[in-house]
Length: 626
Image (tube, rainbow, N blue to C red; front, side, top):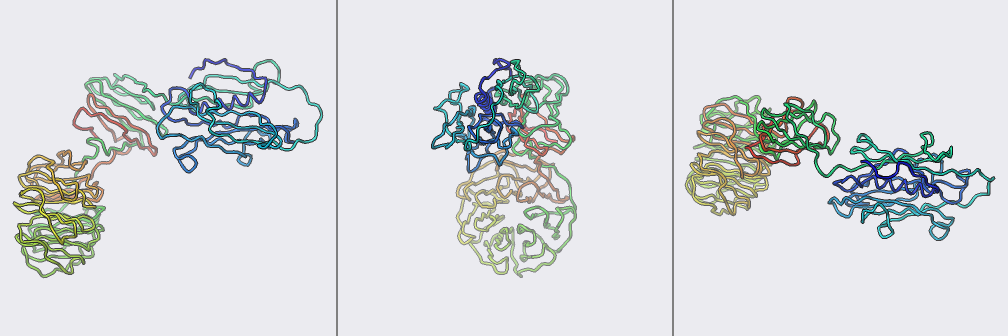
């Protein structure tokens, strides 16, 4: 930041020189340069010399130097919105450094709001005569914000003051030599480690050789007047095929064949880059070793990557533990499988039943499975051993609370049955209907049951009473968020319906398809739904927007982890598919993110090699994440 001030100032009063140096140092800490934020404070390694405190035997002249230092004050009890801490005290050991043990006064200059104000923080000192504040005289330290932006701390702007008092006068010493002038020298400070965006270097010291110039050997203290980050982005037009980016710079990708922009190799926390596609070729942001980009919240940033997992079956139901480590799968051809390693290996547990549904507790140990024309089967050890209730009904679906204690099962052309003791006993609820599906909140309080050709039915009292909701549809499947506030239901040859008020009202949020199974994350945000003869569809915004994923097939069942990152899906006559939702690019040089013409993205470095999206404009369908 170039300066219009003279390169060197001669100050005939040491007290004034110190006060001016301190004030400049404080001004540097937040002020000029068109900064976009509240002041940040830079404190040089050596504190500036300040006003001598009258009296005291600390130095041959009978005066002790008053030193000041300024540090950023984080959000906390002293400043609820952050600010600055001003410390002062006598230089008892005359080493020109304010040690912690020498601090005798502390003031806080706090930000008035969390929003940026662009105001500098100023400090000045003035002599304090002997009196009630300082028995033997001393210095008063004044601080405040530069409200009128004139670089002078006026009395009306002072919001805090403290005193650094001198000691009792010592014995009169021998006459000293004539004093020396104090000098200040100003020079431009290039952008770099000391001042990220440039500024001024302020040096001070005594004119020992009386030549009116502050020589290098006479410098005793250095302060920096640093410019804040520019408010406006510096844009660089890129027509080459690749470029190494710099922090805090915007890039216009202006090429027909695309531009690859590599992230800054050594960013500091808070650094950012912006990229906008100007040319027809789009752009790709490449990474250095150890870097990755978080992609949650970006279109295309949470797509699912799929892989196949044995075995093959006519799958009718899937269930997952909260972390997706334990999975269960049932088939209409008679098999019940479990996996305890996220689907890498599967163990056949039961055969010979026409399974219609399966449910799991959050830890994956309490399992319940139902059969069409048979009994309800339970396991408390993750599928190792099983027992059944001896019933014989056309069970169509089952759901479980997170702890496995509250269960609900539906019988086709029969009733709804609930259990509050993990399936040891059951109670019939509501009337005989063509029940096809059921879902439960984590505590079992909110339940939704779907019929084949009639309405949805909702209970908010653990299944004691049921209320018809929505319109008559050929409902197929249902899902619930952990708290039961968000409910989903799929309709065969219909749409996906969503409720955000625990089932009181429902709305259509998809086009008509042959919808089958559906599953959601615990917060209701991430959803995956299956179609018969079509593709899987996923949403990362609670069903507002749906995107096709995986291949086409006779999809039947879906299960999800609590965070929605891991998904298991099944299609009739095929292997189970396991999906992992992306949350970031691949770590290191293999990862990247790409956009097309008119797409733009702003990233900010948050540490640990991670860049976080802070803004985007998307003119195309989605970003491409690798």
